[in-house]
Length: 137
Image 1 (cartoon, one colour):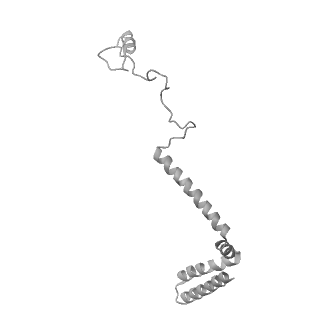
Image 2: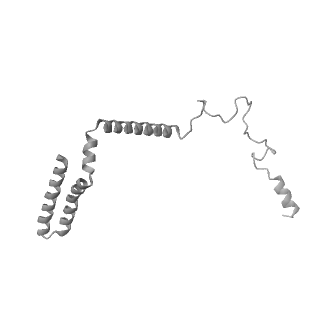
């Protein structure tokens, strides 16, 4: 009841200030002041002030805000850890995934054997040279 009275008084005072401002031929500022002063009155009329007052003095509501804060803290800390790890996903066994199977004797990806000693690996153009010679180029 006290909050509704205070909000209503603030709205009336704001509308009075808006009237004085309009009397001074500052209509744009008067409209803004009137708009701001009507907000508390609208909140009182919709019942939002009563709801806020009931929530502010409710221990259950504050416990709910505490639970929400804890959930937000857990969520943000897990996001920070995920960013620090580089976005890797968790594995079910707890061990990091490996590129090569543990029983393998050598890596599955290796350098191809060099067909000619003068050329670097991966630049075998013998088939291309044969095609070009066949066409007389």
